[in-house]
Image (cartoon, rainbow, N blue to C red; front, side):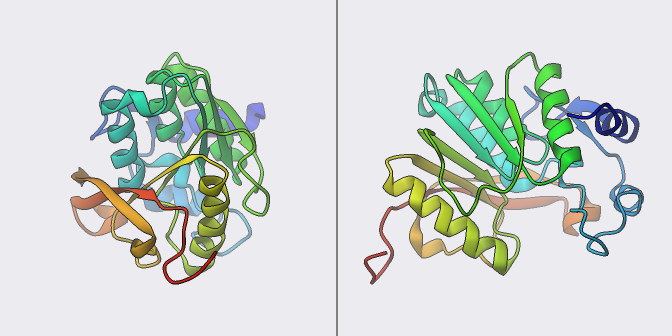
Length: 222
């Protein structure tokens, strides 16, 4: 984590409780558009948009579920994919996970995860990199909040998650009805009405579901 990235996060986001998981505090931006511009525009460069600065609905739902069902992660090795702010990773650590690895492709997100974990008094190993073409390592639980936001990302994410679940990992996904989630490959565990920033989602509340991935593909061997 570079000091420059840490300084940027501290400067442009304030530490505050998460709306649907108030047990966790995150560095969050008050207003998205200005921050988008500061990080070089939504998709105008190779820098990812600042997903780390907001508590997205899928992550909030998944963090709520893990918080309310700590037995799912307690004493187990956890991997949080596309971690963003680190909300889900922090929830897993607070629930007693043996270890938590949070992976992100944005250096600012890695800095935000580390700062947020410290603010919540938990250990999360924040890692910079793209691991979707490899495997989940020794993870016993794999978590992904709001990761099916584009067709290309959804394809890569699903392949990775299937490899993980076939290797024996419990795979849980939080999703607020994004178009690219293949729902027929998941079992529904819970649904919530999650408060969200209206400037991001055009609504104040999003119906959000926590899913468990099945190992098999419908009508295919894999």
